[in-house]
Image (cartoon, rainbow, N blue to C red; front, top):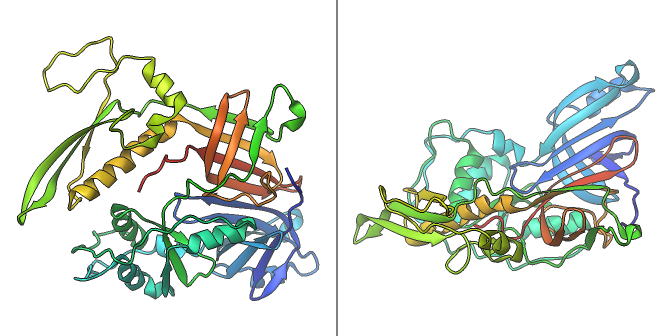
Length: 395
């Protein structure tokens, strides 16, 4: 790894505070809001800390002068000797509309696009702009490195009627619609904006995480564990929907797709290790109810039903997403490394690629960072990474 030093700074009302004794940042790409916690100290005036770092106070957090998060403090609590220090915890600015309930009188208007829907729903929270590359810009700001894919066009997508359910939150309602059209909602550098994005699985790796048995001096992984879980992996999927529109009438549809090999909508099924495992067993073809199968073969059908899809494209997208999530468990790699920097000198961040070369767990492939927890509890900075295979999430 590169420099293992980490300078953590909390900025409140334009003033930067470095008297931080411990801190942690948690990023999770598929979790609605990133979280933070830090302990600040001022032995001469602990009471002032409670006025400065108060609940709902906006805070900007930096690592090595690179912005990592803009959010609000949720909770403060005394800690340390004499309870004089102050522990602050909170989440990024998405927390406001993650926590908020959705007004059931809200309606998706005729002619609404994804962009206009997002702006109408999030306007009360101060959001006034939508972009396709805003999260990429935030990722570049966090890492200190520039990498960006091609944003998918969202401006031309028009929506059909819809309304929130009783008790449904703003974020929950909005993301259910976005996912149906192939998008996720992510933060930007500016809390007045949001980004409509897809995971970036094709950017160049930020170096190699290595645990070598032959050349231990090249090892930069403190500990690493790989999980290969096929519990929820189906051998075949039967997809059904009754919401297809044919001449103004609903028409049922049914399709059968394999999890692996030709015809599979998931790219993970083509990986060498997955094909080797799949090829080592005999798989039962889809059977009709009551038909006697072959007990020596593996038969794990998944029946996917989606009445919310309005057309075949939406049904296929939902099926790809469900199958990719089932295949996600074929390899999850979790490791700890010293410091906050990737092998190329950039700061670790979600939605980036790292090459894993681990002789112990026999993992030798590019993997995508889905979660991370970077912290310093007083004994030096360290980062815990959770990585999955690129293509493990499909929109």
